Length: 335
Image (cartoon, rainbow, N blue to C red; front, side):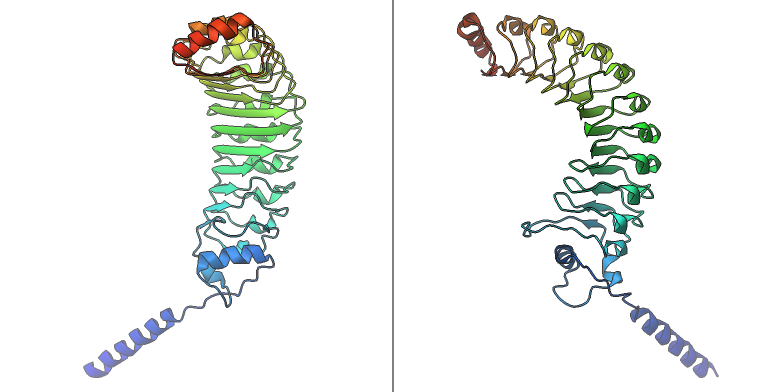
């Protein structure tokens, strides 16, 4: 009887073991986009044969690397089976439809820089996202992002008029809004964790609402019709400012920002540099393509190491006397 019982137990173990070893590979997944299929085969080490859903479940990170880029990915169909994806980087492709990504709720990093994306509604359920890059696209409506409350890094580009959906993104630390059409910046003033802000747009003339962002460390406002930067005077924690390509003439609002280490003011209408003399921590200063004649105030910047001053109507004294003095102080001057 004992021998029979032992035999039955052994048979049961063998049956269970064999069942476990014959696990179904799942459904066969078709990739209409040949370029995407090439990428998937590279990641699954399957040069030929069917690709199964079980193969795709093993992929946690996906990024094109080291293969021909003459043709680009257009269709994401099939990626919906990559249910364990954490990071997806498909920059510089020709992607328009994000629908296959809508169920990939484990994604924490999604990089879609430089595509042809307009509709981002399929991203609304990806609430684990912390890093989302949609720069160099054609986004117009940010509403689908309102639910992505875990976002820390957001980069988006398009003729966006309404920034209200951003008010719920309280964990944002780094925000880039490129070529937007909005003129009301108030929705971002409640983002208390924001330390880096990069904005540009054709309607950007009034930045008075930014005075609330006293915790900012880096501010970039480029290629805009901005002339009045007086609101920046209250942002005393700024360490880096990039205001290249605006309409700025008066830099006196910067005079009290003594934590600044890098200041980029190229392609503006600046004439007087005297307000910058108190920036004792400044080591990099870009002033190319302005209306500057006198650079003597820069001699007082004791920490200055890098200076770009070319394409300015410099006086003979600036060229023959002040620039040699700056170079004598081991300042690398591009003039």
